[in-house]
Length: 159
Image 1: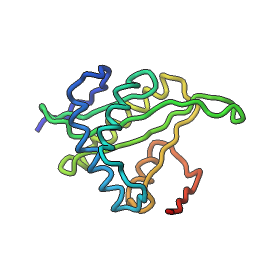
Image 2: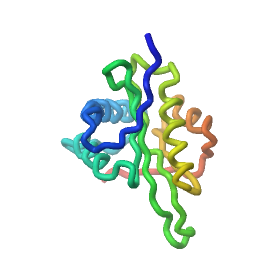
Image 3: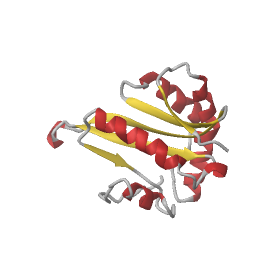
Image 4: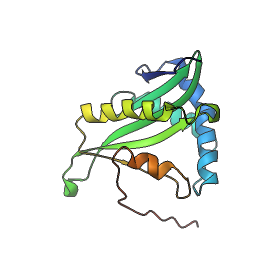
């Protein structure tokens, strides 16, 4: 089997974006199994893809992995400005990372994530933040392998 291609999607009409809808739903199922409390809204994955389309390459980036004709994973990130009281600097936010179960443990996550981190660096962000579900056995370790350090503990109260 050949190595997957790592592709930056720059065109909002790219048909590969449609393949992300069921992957995003599966990502949320996986995150729930590891402690995520918030629920994906009805049609939430579709709303997410449309939001990605709207900001491609302006304030967010989508990187996909493709094996042959099949999209097998994605990672994405966005850039925002810190509040003025924190200096107003550009801050990257690594928002999602997903690889289909049959393609995990083969370096696909790392290859996509490296491509995303290059974009953050090229855009001149001062720092990058990410969040992982509390019980996922490898998420924190994976982020730390990119140089991330634990900064916050986030708590949620359901009403």
